[in-house]
Each structure stands twice: as C-alpha cells, then as structure tokens.
Length: 428
Image (cartoon, rainbow, N blue to C red; front, side):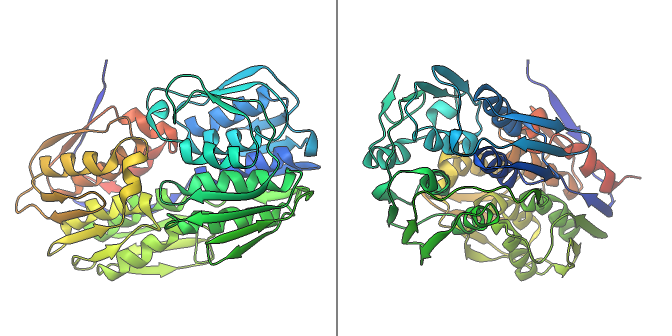
C-alpha cells in the first residue's frame, strides 16, 4: 500500500541544519577502510538504506566493525590484502548503485564464487560497460539472467593491465575500477572512451584513495594510471563530509522563499562535486556565503539559466525545481545519465513538473522548463526515488500544498529529511 504525505505551504523558511554524512563518501570510506591495513575510525557516518546494504555486505564478507548510528561513528577492522575472506555467497544490495559497482569490481580480484544482485530497479540499470572493462582485465563474470544486467556471478581473476572504459554512462564504473586496481597483480592503465560524466565524483574518489595511502595518476580525465601492489593504509581517523547534494534542498528553499538558511557540515573546501550547486544558485541570483564548514543562503530575485550540468547530475534536479520560481525559461543540458539512475529521471522530472503547471520540453539529454503562471495543486509520484521526493518537497513553497506518494523513499540517503525540512518552515 502506497503512503502519501501532504506538505502545507509555509510563509517563510529560516533556520540551520546539521546535515548527515555524504552517502557517496560513506560507502567509499567503508570499503577502503575494509581493504586497509589497520583500524579506521570513521566519523559522521551516514546511516541510510544504501549504507545499510554496504555494511551488511561487508559483514558477510568477513569484515569486523563496531557501528553506532547514534554517534554516527564506525570502527572498521581492515583486512588489508586478505579482503574478502568469504566465498560462495550471495550479496543482495537493493538499489545501492555505489555498493553494487564498487563491490563487483573489488570482488573480481580474488578467485571466489560470489553473486551480486539487487532489487527490481537495480536489475534494470545497465552494468555491461563495467563488466566489459573487468573482463578486459581478465575477470571471469557471468550474467545469471539478462545480459548486461544484474544478477552477476564473479569468480575473480582480475589482473589489471590496459582497460578501455566507456565513460558516458556512469562515473561509478570508473570509481569501481580505480578502487580495485591497486590490489591487481599488474599495473593498470584505464583509457576513457567518449566523454566522462560526473568528473567531480572521480576527483573525489582519487582524493579519498590518497587519504588511504593509494595514488592515481590522472591525465585530464582521459587516462588513469594505477601502480600495482599498493596497499590501502588506514588514516586512523577519517571524517566524512556532510552531503552536499542534501544541502541543495535547504539552500534552494531559502533562495525560493526567503529568510536565511544555513547548512552545517560542508563548506568551501569540500571534496564533493555537488558543492558547485551553489555556483549555479548564485548565478540564478541567490545570495550565497561560504564558511569553512557552513554554507548560508539568502533570497534574491531568481532568473533562468541555460547550462551544461553533466558534472552535478543529482544537484541539477534541485535546480530544475528551483527554476519554477525563476523568471524566464531554464535549460539543463547534457544530463543523459539521469535516465540510468534510481529511475529514468528525465522522464520522471518532466512528467511531474508538468503536473504543477510548468511547460516542459524533454529531450534525449536535456530539459527545458517554462515556469507555471499559476502553480497547480498536485500529487507527485516519487518513483521510489529519494531525490525526486526531496526535490518536489520544494513545491510546497509555492503557496500551494503538494502531496508526495511514497515519501519514505528518502530513507535511501536521508531518513530524517522531512523532519529537517519542516524545522526550517514557518507556518501561520
């Protein structure tokens, strides 16, 4: 049975939010810590559905850890090159793309018999480009149902060497191979075919690998070189930045409705690509102020933009909804990879934006948004996609209430989202 949530319209937004840890950083850090020599104390760990899947998988694979959701901490007892210790198992990872891609790659190194699978949507998300790349490195992998999709059985054998990877579908494919390559028997050279999407996520991955003692040579995001026989070494303590994508909803709320909103846990020196969302919001007219560990937004008159947002696909969804409150027609370009996310986000966003009264042109890799003259009271299908639910909560700032179907899907990355959102809303 589907649940629904009615969001009334506040007259003002104001407040300060302590953001949860980044999902992307949390799952990378958990895996790197598990592969490391030594004990790693991870701080500000996100506790969400995607992270639960990763933690459960690591436990099945023999990793010992002490986790506290209350303290947002996790002590990981790294296995070093012994990772993983278990064989002949099945790992169910829901719709956690970061966990699926990275684990498939890492588990393709040692000889084993491990099946990786996920929920219905995860089994619809293409993975053949990653599999093809791993096979080039001599991995033995087998599709158990439909070719190009989960479930997949890996029997190990990844050696490294020269790999050609299609870069225009998901940056997580490259991230997965980068994380695994230091433990490959041979040096690894990765050549990117076509345009590499979401480059900031790759920059983040490489930066994190350096924190765990492993180095990657990056040649203009076209060629990557990783020496073999490197060891992940625990940094002992690792602080996980708050989620820059999650920050976008609260900062956009201030830009739309007025009042001052601050987000704590991420600042001007963030390693996350979605920090660039603030540059886009500023270009639209919002007033943005950066502190070391805080971002502040104040309302100003918003105007439309026409931009390539390939580097910030998640935060670009927030811009799409924010543009409903801007003057003029906004065009968001080069976002084909929206179509292979938790749902076909280009189709979903176009469909739901029309419901509220916007005139939408949906292209293969772009969205053109003409704001509504009058917002319509609407019931939004979230497609079980956390980002659609969070984005469309902003429609309640229009003066018209909005109903969200299946709002619980935010548990994927931000279980307390609505509590935090309501905390900045002021109602008469």
